Length: 266
Ligand SMILES: O=C(O)CCC(=O)C(=O)O
Image 1: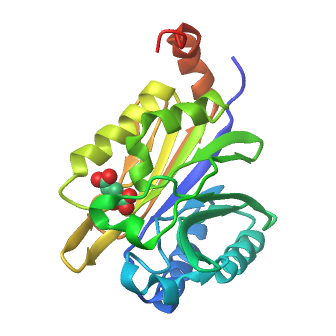
Image 2: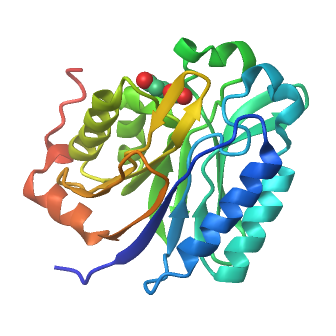
Image 3: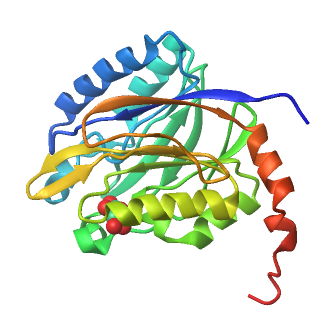
């Protein structure tokens, strides 16, 4: 058996002030400073979906970050200063007249390693009326480990997670703004994605209220056997877990799902 390959993860399960990017940047910076100060310094920090604006969809054209420039400068500087990888949640990201919901990720040198725009827009919350969907998969390498990224509603599409797993992903990152009353969907779908693909699922959901919508947190790190290593409650918090990437190899050898697939039949 190979030696352990550990990654210390911190999740910033934060509240977001709708329509106030300046407030959200300041708030996130404060939480990032706390996350980095821990005795066990994180290797990777993850935060929620659309943390710059929240779902201020009717004003999103004015509020979105132009080409993600402010966000990218902020994340790159922090990543380099603290020598930490950042899976930078997602932001409202303006490209000419279109707004996308985009994850930017940076490595310890402050170099961009991933960019993924949400491909499934959530019609129950009118996303398709204000946002454009991405058309590329979220595949990247984190410290040499193949990884994947999806955003919130994307987890309802098992084909997407399976495709990322077939392409080699051993960790799936999921920033979200997932509200009540669908907590059981959130927990069940995340666990299913981890178990069926035998990979780590690292999810970060926001907390707090926007209008009448209550976001429940419950950010989770789930191992490839489906065990929950850490789970938040409904309060703002920095959650921590240590994952061992060799666990993916062990679980895939124990129940060889990927070898037993019969894709010619389905
Ligand atoms: O699928 C769900 O129930 C929630 C999805 C969602 O809130 C989102 O994608 O923003």
